Image (cartoon, rainbow over all chains, first blue to last red; front, side, top):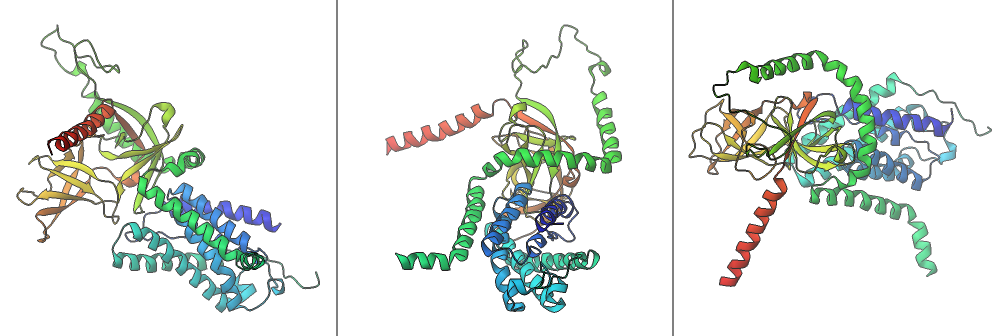
Length: 177
Length: 293
């Protein structure tokens, strides 16, 4: 399957799950909504340029915004993590994009520890920014903090479960090929 | 000039990041200021269609409850049939039709339309409900929306051709004026963004006697959408905050916001006239004040 097709399918599946499953299940406690859809951005291939990464982030966020409806809220958060992503990958695994043996970020490609850090940092960043934007208009400070931590914990749990349940089958890429 | 271009090229990613952030934030803030889902005009049609398909599946999960409820509703309506009553005076006949003015001189003020919920949320700070009726079916902004049991659910916030978006009572920026059924004092119904089963009622003066279990109904004094006297909920908890002269009451709504499927959209046929009169009066008074000054 080509990268393009694979990512289009992923996009539809992630948005669908977020809108029709995760946003519908009764909240665990008050307002913790598990957020999973941005895994799409975290799983985009290494080879994507920074500019296109930003555009993809914006489009992903905007699509979700149309469904929720909260114009610009998720788009802003997604653009932020799409911007930070390349820097983080550089710091965690200082390699050039062509030197990776796999196409996209995964425990196999980066190793479990750097990959976990990568996921945790971006999840926290995304949720903090999202809740912060909501909080600008409404809310109390404690609810704000609790909401960030709660939402992030639930999201992380879901992401790692997804990672263990559905290991992505990826071809090992050699420099020769 | 060359340096400027070099600078732009060097920071192109950062600049595009800033630009996209600004676009997103401007969507967010302009939308909130105007309280209107203008942004969604076009998207409404697309998301509406997707939501309709998903909702078809979702409906099967609630069939039994919905059936029981509809049956109960039918039962109560059948009881109201005119054939159930004796008419002592045969020269008088009650006629209500959809024309706003009939021969007996009765004016029709509220017109009810049924609609189906295609998307609903209860877990955010700002919850919206989408229904499958839009401008083509005569839905306009600010119409009231009640559940099939006749309890308030929200107000129409935005309309596209075939769908409309309703600002649920579970929306932190939604304020509805309601009345205590027993003491006839009015208050303002809000939501704190926490629990979908609890609404907050403020601005009921402490001089009023309130008991747990008191009924809250829509107020006849609010200028706007809801017909007066609709049942909203009951008082569940009385918060004794000493700081202000008002009660803060927790209200248990009669409607279960998580389970709404069928709704009625209520049109106040005199809405525009009432609002216009209100505005004109304010203007008139202000002008006459200026003159006297």
